[in-house]
Image 1 (cartoon, rainbow, N blue to C red):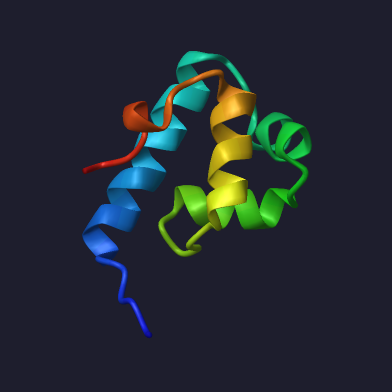
Image 2 (cartoon, one colour):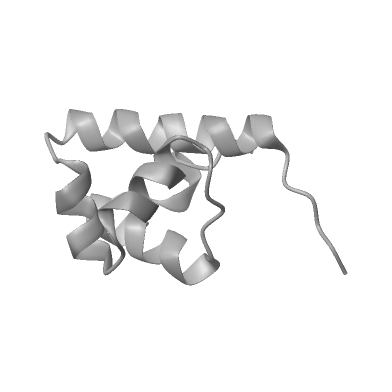
Length: 74
């Protein structure tokens, strides 16, 4: 089954991540390192270009110390 991701939701998700990261005064590198992913991949998530797995999403939430409901746009 192919599931299409709404690009607007993906971009809003990325903006939410960026806003939270910046409020916490963390760099993309800080979050990527704490999450175990590359900085390039994390930056792509923030730009709405990458669609992270559930495991990556969970690790990002832990790194930012937020609930998924704070970053998901739905």
